[in-house]
Length: 118
Image (cartoon, rainbow, N blue to C red; front, top):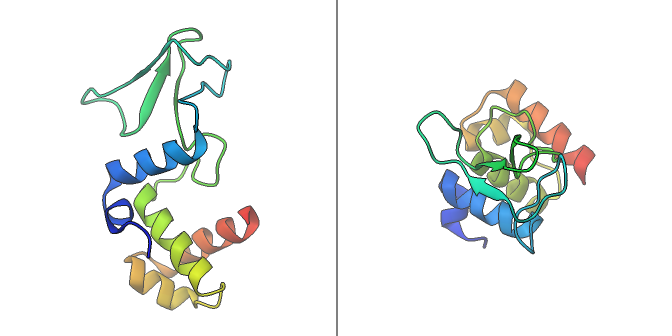
């Protein structure tokens, strides 16, 4: 069973994915900078947003992944990923949507992105 906190808390979900993707620390996907980076934590910045002080562009761990440009919270993505992998992709869209609390259309999008990413 995966860490339950990671699957229900958005901040913990971001930290878990950051550890998986950035094993040696964060890296700017735009310029490759590793040292002049800072986590943005103001009220106007999204959760998990970093800023590169070399190229001055914001980024997050979602950049370049199946989670990129998704309005669905990251912890819901991780829950869906866990459910689909553990069921062997045999979970219906209606059941997936009901479990995650999302629409069937969103469940279809999520399942398609996960299937394409695997």
